[in-house]
Length: 302
Image (cartoon, rainbow, N blue to C red; front, side):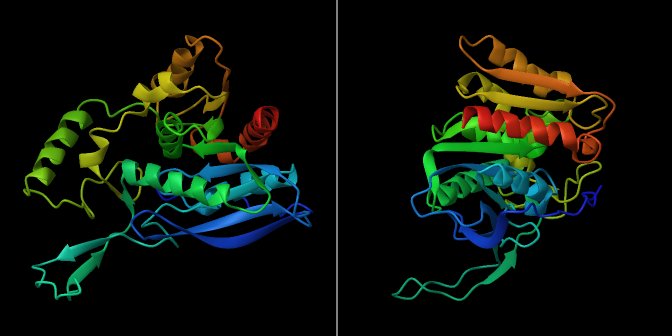
């Protein structure tokens, strides 16, 4: 299922958007936008929010949320994960590589990797997006939060568990649980085949996931388990789930994460299920509540 066409952004008064490029640690350019309140004084210091889209999404998935947060006096950054839409691609070597010359240069054929869902690469991209916004003018680096949706919710949990710069999380319809059976066994088989050279190390156009576009990197997904990192979180966490969730069962994902967080002394957790909406309904009939709840949470803890 391709990502639905979301309602058009109506830019709030007093907010401006600037296209930016965020460079990841592999030298791939990530397509990004920064949303800022207009006419800030140089000495003004504001909280910042990095927004992380889900499987098949782009920076535009979160544009309405980013504009809303900026209208409330935050600086927001949205970005598209590598190999998707306007972001650059990692490269895969094709065939034998000629020996390098004395400057370590050679000519080689390469293939652009597109529409790949590699959770560890996505988490690394979230890290550099936070690096970028930390250096944005007017950002207070001690007040950075992350908003994330769908598959991006698991990415955000995985990263926030290890990055003390993230001071608050706002998640909606998050995919946090590891692969279940029989997918787990199949993914482990794929991981072994990739490591041993019996399957392409970088998959393209194989192992399609039902109802989702792109190629899942099953060798990586076999080991990706954000749920196991939830008990490491020490930041206020908001979770909004869909009452008619059909993609990532609430009991195994958002509700289970909330249950774990409630066992941690002093944790701040707010989990609510919005009734009557499906997974993608969070962007439509659930948008009003979901976005307002996220904004209130960010304002409270940033």
